Image 1: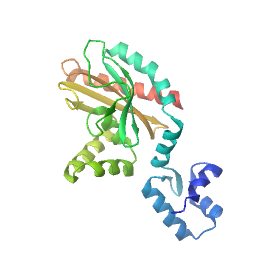
Image 2: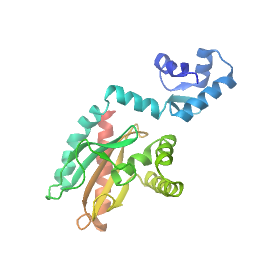
Image 3: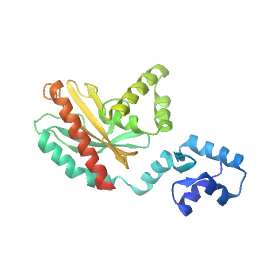
Image 4: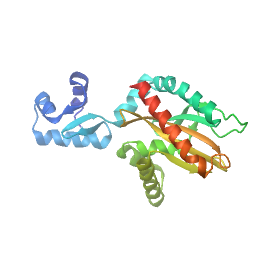
Length: 234
């Protein structure tokens, strides 16, 4: 696999058109296509439009490991999380994918003296709960499938993939008693430029308080809050 393509993003910027790659690398088009296919399958680059390519999810993850780039996300999210916590009174969490795990980056306790299974720095079950599922649903398909196929039996993995597809279409994840008994979890994605996943914003509360008549309001508040965090990061 020729990694010179990755170096082009450093010198020429992103995204790059395939014609620019051909000119810079001076290789046959067929050879370049084979190299692009290999890098795309590995997650190092991804399509960004017709004939356009950008660094992929794996390149982004490697960058996060080196630069600890969650700090700006946490700083942008905390004031908005505090507002949600004060207004709704429920537990509020900020989560993100870190390698092959979901980690709680920030946590605010429920105002009603009810404690749930979340704390700052905690590593969550990758496949359970709204806080994890919202992240899986918005990952690039190659990364999502790799994580699921590596850990779950085929039938179980297929069911989860179908659920994640519905979550992506709806724009939120909603779970009941998956992490804590009789607790509702709701989560929305924080997206950069409306596309690139940065993290997830979620609330958790008892089902008697977050009931069917209130869920719609909670979802809209979370979507607005996630959009505000995204705006702070742009």
